[in-house]
Image (cartoon, rainbow over all chains, first blue to last red; front, side, top):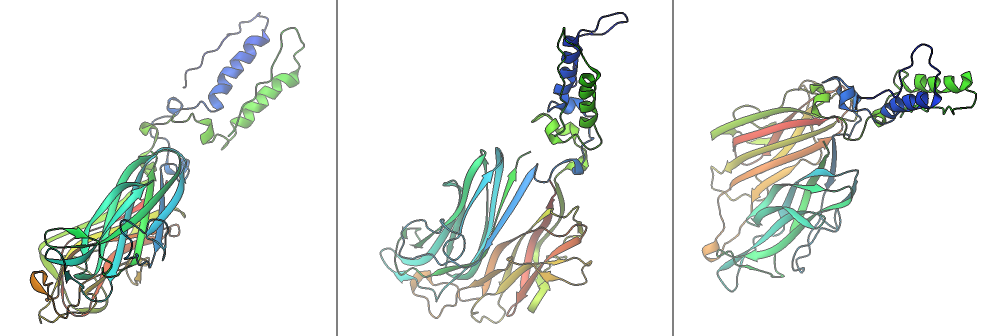
Length: 207
Length: 214
């Protein structure tokens, strides 16, 4: 705040009272010692070089290659490691409250040949679905992909507000069989899907 | 952070010149050239009006192509620039300083259309991002951007869920790339493809790069 008030204005012949001298000095010192703000700066005078890197935005990227989910596992999996043991699991510390933008591009290939089988209701195909989580909360979910398309890829993007402190971003996959009625079932004969190159980018937008 | 320390003067005691000068010297040091730093500024004390437009942290260079009938991209055995009517490529992007982060995103939809009716094994289309820092004279493939698309090889399909036998893919690809290049280097980016068996039709594409400087 640019407004500061002198406690005493000395006139000729006055006896200088040190109390007011110190108070006057302290009034101004308080401004410089961490009290400067927009009132002290002319408009549009802060340029890029005045701003420390990362003050507004912090971008972090992680890449991985390889990972084959366990087809005997029921439910979501792959969110506990990054690399050949999982899709993504990244923990970071946010300096302050911010908007977190999480995005990921993921490629995969189905193993073997199409393995649709006649089970309880029509013919089932092997499918998988991905989801992106921040601190265990889903922020993005992919569509359902089947193994007709041997090589495929997708992109997911989600945004959430986070507080300062440690946070974890993870990606999970669920392998299922589905039929034309969109009935889903678990079957250990589900074809293997192997994940290939993938990139996770998370952007902390602080200002 | 530069800091001013006010030396206390107590009524009734003798004030020496050293006491007064100590305070004034502290002011001199605190206000010396380059001494004022961000910590002298109150937290949340600045707002939008304080910043010059150049302080904006994100710089973009984007291109957008739309082609409702699809632009023909011929069979290519090695990485070849992809076109959706025009080559999917950015202009030069000046990186302001070392440590700036560049994020490149490309999204495009396309199909391959078999003219022979043969069943393809493996992938039909292989996509990557490429970068050039010499005005487009030489290009290198950017790591971790490869995405492949292709139908499953089917020997025989049972019943009503018979999967497609023609080599036809209609997909939307998003290539994502993050890098921290050297200062002062002008990079440009493009989408490249391999399609060893069939032509590729690209319908529309968006490619853009962002520089996060601050």
